[in-house]
Length: 153
Ligand code: SF4
Image (cartoon, rainbow, N blue to C red; front, side):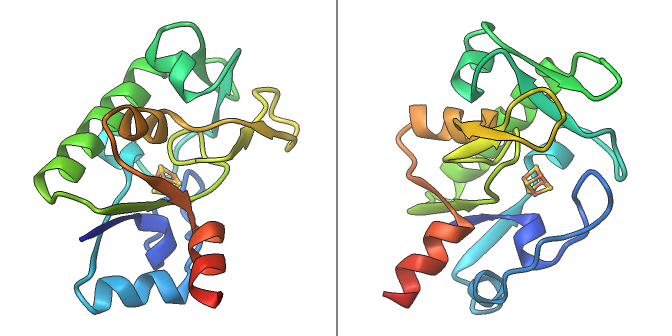
C-alpha cells in the first residue's frame, strides 16, 4: 500500500485552501492502492492557515530541535509540525506502507526541495519534517515529480 499527500489527490487541504491534483496519484487511491494523509491536518492545523517555512535547516534539523518552523507572521509552529510528522509515521506503520509519495517543496512533505525560510519563493535542497521522520524510520519517500517520472519511464 502506498501513502500519498492529500493535496495530490485533489483535496483542498493546502494552507490557502487549494489542492495540487495529480490524476495519476489520485488513480492510485481510486484503485485502492493508496491512502492519502495530510500531516498538517493531522497536527491540528485548520484550512486556511498561515504559510510556514523551515528556518535554519531542514526537516531533520527540526526533529533534532536545531531548526524551527515559523509562520510568515513569526509564530513558532515547530512542535505542531513534529506532531504531524509522528501522526503520519503512525499511519505509515499501521498500513505498512511500501512507498510514500509526498508533495515537493512543503515544509512537511518535501523530499528534495523546500523553501528557504525567507518567504521569498526561493527553494533550497532539503526535506520536510514528515519526510525526515519517515526516512529515519525506514520508509522510502519520493515526490510527485519523481513518481510521475518513474511511471513515464
Ligand atoms: S503538502 Fe503535505 S502538509 Fe501540505 S497540504 Fe499537502 S499533504 Fe498537507
